[in-house]
Image (cartoon, one colour):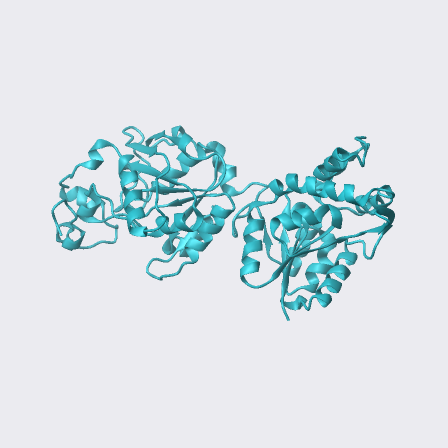
Length: 475
């Protein structure tokens, strides 16, 4: 038997209620005669805040009577019009989940109380395979005012899904169900993989008691929400470079970061302070970012949990796994900003001072997979705030603050055919954003070399392997 994934609509696939868009569409085609329903706005606001309640759903059930006599073709046109609006309100990671389930061979089904003729156009636009929804009875091209079959809500939704599953040879024990509503507990309890999305207060309790996973479809997996905001958004108002007492951070070119939609930000790597400095730059644009970071950060107690909560993506270098790129591609598909440092790690020894930057393929491959614009960033001076040989940033430098600069350029022109060539273009574009002194070879002193090495390094910096000596003219 096959499996399926069932998605509730309101407050699950959508952040709020579909009602306003559907009501507007019905008025636009003349079925509600452009009249205002008293208390309508308040009902939608309450629903968006706390979810479904029994009185409002009983009123929803009576809506079939209001539709008595409506021309079914005109009502279907309203569904098509509403779909155009609602498609833009679908939460970003919903589409990612749809694709994931399709890749795993599962059918994707929208299961909702909303009438079938009003929700099916949206489901088709999203690429869903089918719809389980309330069906209004028809006769001679008009609605009769009755419901044909189940009112798809609460236990009625469970029965409707169970009937659909039997008809399509679907094994519910291998299937998934996603919902925000306490009234969908019977459905979630019936599948092998229940997932709670943006839960209402009573569903949140059920999720805790039953140990059901809870996610938000407007944020990556593992990123919690607090009053509808993820951690990056909570701290964004205070993420201002002028509030950093131990560094003078200058940021230029933030207008080159798109205000919306996917983007891959690529920068050079000089310090453990780089992610924070870049975070300040992107926060200035008002967008959360997803950093690709090495596994050691994510495996560390507390720090790892914090990195994941902030939307980080774990990378295990040398493993050959494509999972980090797939996770980054999913974030880009959801319209997120992803940050990659193509060098992979902070260069050691003389390589740190090489004006020619060497990069790995990750950013180029990700760009080829997603066609997201690649935006270069030049990072300079961060090593003075947190040199590699220091275990913590030099926060005591408040009287003689080092200067840090972040310069953001325009999107790199890539071929998408040759990852080596595209990686070279990306690294050259990063160099173009660096100050003039970064483009000249600098013979480091012993103290400068020492600052490029981990605090655990016990050898003499001068004895570093010559493979890391990348001065012009060397092999």
